[in-house]
Length: 607
Ligand code: SAT
Ligand code: MN
Image (tube, rainbow, N blue to C red; front, top):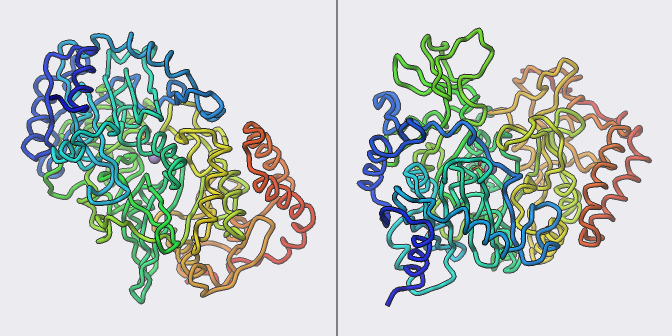
C-alpha cells in the first residue's frame, strides 16, 4: 500500500510529467552527483546550472547564474490563499484556494517535461526538537535540490519520520519556463502546502525558507501558540563568560547575516551564531521564551561582505567542508575563476564578467555583482557557531531587538517600557526598501517586526497574537529597537556599524541584567551617556547626540503614517496598540523639548 506521501508525489508527477523521479537521500555522494548533473546536463538557456569555481581558494564552491529576470523575491506574485480574504489581511495578496489551485494546475500541467523531479525530504529544526517540522519539497532543478541540502536538514530518515502521516509540509516547485508572467508563489496555510512556479530564486524556490518557515509557520504558530519570526538568533558572551541570548528582527538585506557573526570590537565580548534569518519562538515550561533556528544554512547577500565587514563570513565561505558552497549572480574573475563582488577585499580584478556573463567595463557604472547576489553555505562551516545550535530545546531569549533601515528619525537604540509597549514599537517599525525584493529601492514602508512580506495571516491578528504570547511569559524578554542606518547632512552613515554594533548589544545585555540605569524619552529608554561604551570610537559628541535626536515634528508625521498603516487592519488592530499609540503622541507633545535639553552624548569621547 502506498503511503500518503508516496500518493502525493505520484499525483504531482501525473500533473507535472517529469521524465524521471529521483528521491534524494541527503548524502554527500548525492550532493556531488547533483552538482555534476548541474554542470553537465541541466541548463538555464545555454548556461549550465553550476560552474566549478577555483577549488584551491574557494573549496567545494560552485557558481550559479540565474535567469536575468529572476534575481529577487517577487512580493506582487506571492499569494496567501486562506478561504477567507479577511484572514489573509491587507498585508497579503489573496486568492481563493479553489481559484488559486485551478490557476496553478493549468500552469503546472506538464511543466516538468524533459526534466527530473527531485523529491527532497527535509526537516526544519533539529529532528529531535519538539518544535521541528517534517517536510517534503518537489523541484525540477538541481540548484534548488543542492541549495535545500545546504539550508535544511535533508535526509532519507525524514521519510521514515513522516511514515503514514498525512500532515507533512508539502512544497511543489517548478522553474517552469522562467516566464515572469507565469510566475506565482502560492501558499495554502490550512493544507501546509506551498506551490511555486516560474522562479528559481531563493525566497521563491527554497520552499522551506520564507514560504514555509515564515508564511505558513506563522499561521501554525498563531493557531498553536508560538511565533515564527524573521529574526537572527545570537549569544553574546561577556568578559565573565556568561552568554545572553537575543533575537534580532531586521528586514532582508539590512545586515542580519553580518550581525549574526559579528566580530566584536570590544575586548572580552564575543558573539556566538545560532541563526541569521529565521527564529521559531516557543513559550517554555519555565515561562521563558525559547528560540530555535529551523534552518541549517546561510543565504546571505554577497556585495559588501569582506574581511573588514564580516571576517567570520569569509572564513565560513572558505572553510573546507563536505557541503558545497554556492555563489549566485556574483561577478567572476576570469583569470582566477573566483567569484567577485563589490566590496570584496583586494584590488578590483582586471578581467571580470558581470552577473549576466558579460565582460565588465569599469567605466560603465554598472555593477559586477547583482545587488542581491547571494551565497549559500552550511552554518556548520561558521567559526562562531554556538555549541547550542543543535540543542533541540533551543536557547532562552532575554532580549528581542527590532529594527529597520532608517536614514532619519529613529534613534540608535531604545528600550521599550514593557512587552505591550514593545509590541507597539514593533508594529510601528518602518524600513527603507532594499534589493532583496523586486521593487523600488529606498522607499519607506511600514515593516512590523520585519514580517510585512512574510506574515501568513492578517497582521492585526498577528499583533494580538504577540500580545497574547506576552501574557503567557512569566519572564518575558525585554524588547528594544535599533537603527544602524541614520545619516548625517552629507548622507553618510553616522554610526560605524558592523563589529562596533557590539557596543549597542553590550548596553542591551547590561539592561537585561539590570547593570545600568537608563534615560526616559517619549519613545522609550535610551542609554545614559556613560553607559554606552564609545571609547576608541572616532565619533564626536555632536554625532552621538544626532544618533539619539528625537525631532517632535518629524515624529508627528511618522505617527500619522503609522496610524494610516494600523487603520488598514480595522478592528483587528488591538486596542492595546492604539493605547500605546495615543500615549506616544501625547508624550511627544509634552516632553520633547525638555528631553532634548538633557541629551549629552559622547562625554567620554575618544580613546
Ligand atoms: O529571498 S530570501 O527570502 O531567501 C532572502 C531574503 O530576502 O531575506
Ligand atoms: Mn530574510
